[in-house]
Structures are given as C-alpha cells and as structure tokens.
Image (cartoon, rainbow, N blue to C red):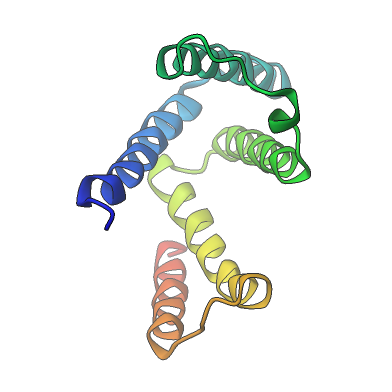
Length: 143
C-alpha cells in the first residue's frame, strides 16, 4: 500500500511549484522578450534538473534512450506552450488570481472526455457534476 505522504507529496510539489511559477511569470518585466524569457526558464529548469538528478542518484548517468521518447518530447512541447501562453496572458493584463483558474478549469473539463477516450477512465455522474460546477465557476470568474 502506498503511504499517505507518497500520495500527497507530489500534489504539494505541484501546488508549490505552481505558486512560484505564476508569481514569477506575472513578475517577468515587460521589457523582456517572451521567447527569450522561455529560453531562460528552460535553462534554469535544466540546471536544476541536473543538480537534483546528481543529488538523488549519485554516480548514475542517465541513459540516452530514456531522455528522448515521443511522450517526453510531447511533454516538453506542452510545457513550452504553457510557459509562453502564461507569459503572454499576463502581458495581456490578465490577473494572476484568475488566469490559472480559468485555464486549469478548462483543461479539467477537456481532459474528462480525453481521459475516457484514450485511457479508458470512467465518466461518472459525479465527474459530470464537477464539469458543470467548473463551467459555472468559469462563468462567474468572467463577471
């Protein structure tokens, strides 16, 4: 059985990272070119990833075949789209308190049928009710 911390810790990491991410993305000066900023973002992420890998797996060398897979490349492309999208969203004067809620709400709604079609995840009445509440919340945020 998986311990509670093993289940909750990754979510805490995502939430903490998202807080840092959105505050920092909203704080990138307008004078900075968005694409150049994304290059800086990924340079920092690469350095941090290498440092964490070295600390977590002393003496290990990552296998090249495990670094590049179509799914890994797709995650990278998706991350690039998210990074650039949020930089441009904040430059378009979206409030930091609203932009992530709207985008994450829409993603949650869109992933429900995708999860069912691709991964065989069940669509239940509770999940449909959740989508309805997401849509209601999104409409309230637009006011």
